[in-house]
Structures are given as C-alpha cells and as structure tokens.
Image (cartoon, rainbow, N blue to C red; front, side):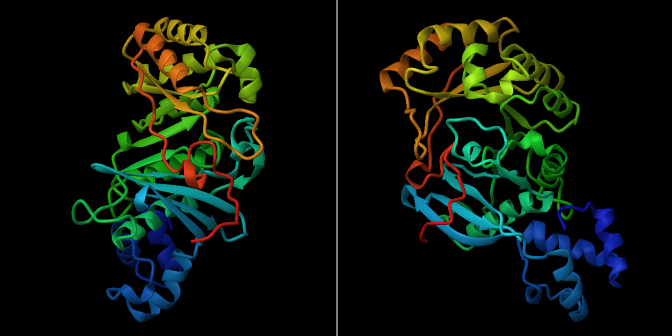
Length: 356
C-alpha cells in the first residue's frame, strides 16, 4: 500500500469492488495504528477484510530472527522479503528519542572494502513499501513493549536513518517516495518530521543535487571517510567517478538550497585515514566553502569478518577530533550501538545464522 499515494489507493479500492473511502480507513490502521491483521479492522465490512486488506497489505517482511544488546535498548532484525532476499534493520532507544536504521537495498553495489554490506554485493533494490514496512514493524514492536519500558504513551519511531543496507541514492525514486510516506500526515503516511530523517550517501553527486531540489528538508549525510582522492579512490570506489571536491561541493549546494546543515561521516581506520594531516586537510576543504554549514561525525571503524582493518586507537581519535575542532569544524564522536550483535554501521550483512 505504501507504494501508492492516497488517490491511487482509493482507485485500487474501487477496482477491487470496495468503496473508495475504505482506502482511507485501511491507511489509518496501517500508518497510524500499525495494525495489519484484518480481524482487528472492525470498521471494515467482512468482504473488505477478506479481499481488500490482503491485496493492499500483503506480507512484506517476515522476521527470521532478532538479536538484542544494550539491555534490550538495541534490537537488530533480520527480515526475509517475499522473494527470499534478506535485509536488516536496527532499532535503538535513546533518552527522548527512538531511532530506526533502515535498509534501502538488499545488499549494496558500492563495494566499499571496510563495509560488510558492500562486500556482500547487491541483490536488488527494495520497494517503497518494503522500506516503509520496516518502520511500521518497528512501531509494532515498540507498542508491544519490545523495546523496554515506555517513556510515554503512544511511543513510536521518532528518527529514521538511511544507514542500513544499501546506497539510498542508488535506489532514488523508491527511497524518495518512502521519505514522503514517512513525512506525510496520516492517513497518507506516518506523519514524521523530515528533519528527523537522515539520508546518507557515499557521494552520488547527480543524485545529491536532485535531492536538494525535492523540497523535503531531510538531514543529509555524506559518508566521506577520506579528504584526499588518493586514499578515497581505494576505500570508496565511487570516488573514481565523482571526486572528493565534487562530493563536498554537492553537499555544500544541498546546504545552500535547503538551509539544512550537512553531516560528514568519517569512519576512523587505524593507520589508514586517521592521520593528523588528514584532519587538517578535511578542515581546510570544508572551511573553503564557508562556515557553519557542516558538522563532522567521526566514528570508530566497526569490525567486520575477515577485515584487515581495525578502529583507530582512542588517543589517535582524540587528536583527530582536536585538530578538526581547532580548525573551526564542529565535530562529535558518534555513539556506536549494536556492535556486539553486528548491528553497527558497516556491519550489516543479513547473515541468516543467529538465534532469538
């Protein structure tokens, strides 16, 4: 259903012999209440529950298993899609907010060597409905008390980050439609704030520029990981197509058009990209485009099976951050959640092995 806007849902209802307004009722159940069971939709006639609901709300995600850490405040879900493809999403409770890290592709075609998802390769793009259903399923878990004691009544996912499996901007149309469903008010969508949706990319420059023109003020994050082309060509293969300066220019254009501050993601890899001079170079390149438009989020590299790389030493991390701040760049070391269950950034590999 999330593949369709409200007009298309109403038209589909009539095609199925159901009054058009039933599409609005069904949409309220799904988006507002997280209800997918026909028997609970008592405002729909029996005929609609038997035919219309299964047609509009087929099973999209089937849980294979879930893994928990952080005293139950972090849950990694492995989902099987209708064709057997596997994806993962990670639900995290923080004080005052609940964040869901969603996938946008089954696997990833960017081939970044330090990322488990990239090493697995791309199976296919996810549909808008599959992307959205990750959030609806997470809201159902929260409503059932599965994320621990609630801070208030009616808790739902408040923040979405496209930092799961896949390169979101390589699945552009479906991802943008999913963002619209996240931000449209019920019954059309989930009624979330666009500012609480973060889209992360390794630097698909034409798509970044297209995103800036969408008039959806999402938070934009550029996964940079190196300020120089010599290194970035090796660790972010798409850099051979769009260079560091092109990616930073596109990110700055996003800020200029939307007024939304940009985040730069930077995984600190021991003896690879954590040198002090690289912090200085990064600060220089960002400052060359102005002040106040960007924030850098270093994160220690999360381990992946068979990787020859490890996270930077804490003292090296501190020096890297110090030099960025000394250069006038707002910098915050990002919190790492889910590392123990291979649920942190760069670790999602949709491994079917695991236990609940």
